[in-house]
Every structure is written in C-alpha cells, then in structure tokens.
Image (cartoon, rainbow, N blue to C red; front, side, top):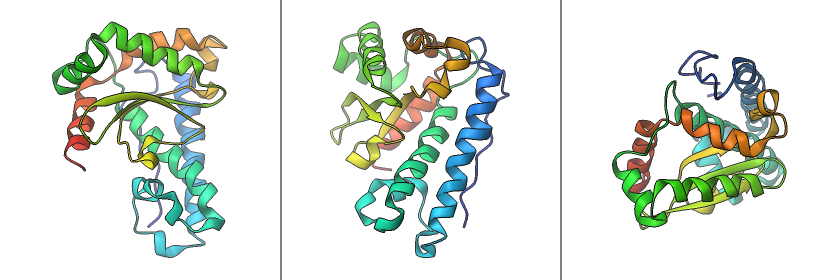
Amino acid sequence: MAHELPPLPYDYSALEPVIDAATMKLHHDMHHAAYVKNLNAALEKHPELGSKSPEDLIRDLNAIPEDIRGAVRNNGGGHVNHTMFWNIMKPKGGGDPTGAIGEAITKTFGNFKDFQTKFNEAGVKQFGSGWVWLAAKPSGEVQILSTANQDNPISQGLPPIFGNDVWEHAYYLKYNNRRPEYLAAWWNAVNWDEINKRYAAAKSGK
C-alpha cells in the first residue's frame, strides 16, 4: 500500500507566533508531501517492501536494496521525521516537561534549563540541513544527538523521543538566518503529552 501524507493535527496558523502559517503550508504541503511521493516512487521498484512501515524501512537501511537505499534513507526518513514533528507540537504548548520524560531529563541533565541550552547548542552547531534529537538509549536513559539531512536516530538503534527540524525551510520565512532564535522560540510549541507517549513506547520497545 502506498504511504500517505498525514494531515496536520491543527490549523496552519495554530502554532503562531512560534511558526507562521506560511511556513507550515510550505513545510507540510510541499516538503513533507514530496518525501511521501518520492518514497512511494522508489518502492514501486520493490513491491515486496510495500507492507513495511516507514519506521521499519529506515530502521535497517542495509536491508534495503541498494538501488533505492538512498531514496528510502532520504525520503523515508523525511516522512518519519515530519510525521513525528507535527505531532510533538501543539497550540499553546511549551512549559516545563512533565511526567516520565521530565524525570529523565532532570536525571540526565540536572535541570530543564541546562538541557534546553545543550539541545539548542546542538541544533545551532548542526552544519547545513539536519535535525537535533532527544533519543532513548536501550537502558531508558536519554541523550542529545544531531543528524544530517533526513537521517533519524532509529537507524542507529536509538528510538527518537522528539526532534527539532533545523532545515532552513523549517524557519527561514520567519526567522531568516537566525537559527538560534528559532530554536529558542520552538520550545513554546512543544507537546509534552505526546512526547511522554513516545518515551513510554521507546522504553517498552515499541
């Protein structure tokens, strides 16, 4: 079955002033849609992969036929990353992390402010296009890492709890080249309820 572009879980303007409606339309309707279209086009060459989820496709890229591996890595990753991205944000989000993920952040980084600083620094330092992540270790501990392009920590065996998109198309209309400003503002859109669900799923091995 063909992969489909999921609808946004809120209106284009719902995350303003953090992310503007024009950026959301471009990001979801054009960029994410293109990843889905290109992923489907690649998989047409190997219909035996049609039953695999996008996450399963990028979990073990070495198992993907070489002639479409690059396309699956880029476009499957883009599909997985953006599907996560829309859901770990919400209108009037933000605030301090709650529940188990809040405890994990405090245990690993000391406090939320220090974690934010380190997360934002990793996002600023990611050269070119990519993502900054909080991922889970097999022990349930968490770590910050960054990846280039549309790579996802799941390909390294590390379930991503949440991530922020630092491709220029994610912020340039509003923030221009001011990536640090975008990274700082983004915390006001974070959906800690959804992030806690993802953390629970990661710890349970799902």
